[in-house]
Amino acid sequence: AQSVTQPDIHITVSEGASLELRCNYSYGATPYLFWYVQSPGQGLQLLLKYFSGDTLVQGIKGFEAEFKRSQSSFNLRKPSVHWSDAAEYFCAVGRAYNQGGKLIFGQGTELSVKP
Amino acid sequence: GAGVSQSPSNKVTEKGKDVELRCDPISGHTALYWYRQSLGQGLEFLIYFQGNSAPDKSGLPSDRFSAERTGGSVSTLTIQRTQQEDSAVYLCASSFVLMRAGYNEQFFGPGTRLTVL
Image 1 (cartoon, each protein chain N blue to C red):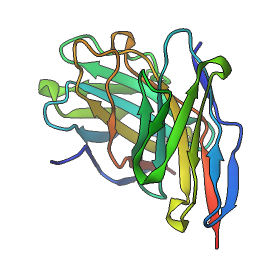
Image 2: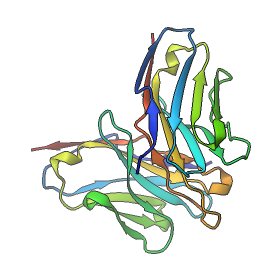
Image 3: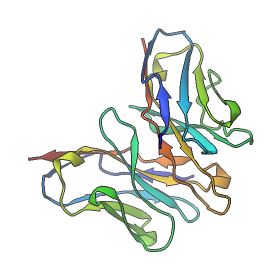
């Protein structure tokens, strides 16, 4: 069965420091991978996605993620964190549309940013 | 253009009452999804509508939950005889399905926070 694991429930980083959020997935075929961000009281906003091609994908707000098939990972990175990045981050794998297209989410990683 | 909208934004109800949650997808999007976000279970898929096909109801947690999509646009999620464990944020998403694409990005609404007392 497909699954997504985000090992870190909560991470605290200092403003200006680099960030890496981990994501591991289990999926039998070529995965469609996503990172979403959710600020308090807000819906989910797509940060970036990987469908195929270049394994390093760029997203909004200065985020990037690298797909590593050998490690079944899709870690999210940012070189310098801003206080406004404090939020909850969700990694997800999507099933092909002819299999329903639903997203399977990880449990989320809450990011705190200290001044 | 307008994004996915959901109403109400907050709903407080008493145990045993029925509730209806509404989702207006992005115009032209053929696929519509409902998800539930709760403290204990995280983000879970509930149901999926695509065009005129039969919906995928595999994520509905019980027969108290049902959903319909009228005219291929607006969707209503109904929970009958609400229980306290139904308290959660209910998120709706829509996407435009391209026949040649294996996957299509989903756009999410702000959610409806349901509290069952």
